[in-house]
Amino acid sequence: MATLDSWIEGVVWVPSDGGYLVFSDIGGDRLKKLVPPNRLTDFLRPPANTKYNGNLLDLHERLISCQAGSAALRVAVMSNGVSAPLLTQYTNGAKFYSPNDLAIKSDGSIWFTDPGYDSGLALPSGASFPRGFQPGLYVYRFFQTNGNATVQ
Image (cartoon, rainbow, N blue to C red; front, side, top):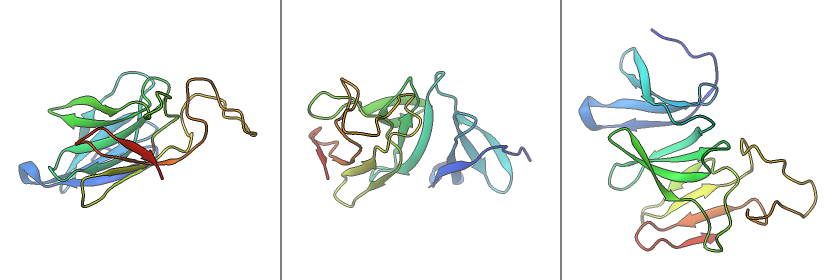
C-alpha cells in the first residue's frame, strides 16, 4: 500500500461505486482516494499552488471542497474529476484568504471558515487587511440555490 509523508484532512466517505474515502493530502497538494481495504490513488491533482482542505458531500452527494493556496481561494464542487467554483468572493466582491473547513446544514447551506492559512498573503497583526480581500477572518454561510453568502 502507498503511504503518505504528510498530514491528511477533510476525510469524507463517498458511497457511490461501492464506496471509497476521499481526503486532502495537505503536503502533496492533492485529493487522494482510498478504496478499501488498501488501494490508494490520486483522486484529483489540482493546478500548481492550489491546496485542498475541508471536503464534504452536499445533500445531492456532490463533493464540496475548500481550496486555498495562491492559485485558488474558493469553495468548489467536484464532478467527474473536474473542480468548478461555487464561491470565489463574498457579496462585497472581496476575495477570501483561504477557505479551510466546512459543514453542510440540512437546509443545504454550506458553512465554512476562512482563517487565513495557506493563502500566501502576509496577514496583518493589526486591523489593516490587504486591499481586495475580506476585512477580517470569518465564518461564512453560503446558499447554492440563490448565491447568497453571509458572515456569521
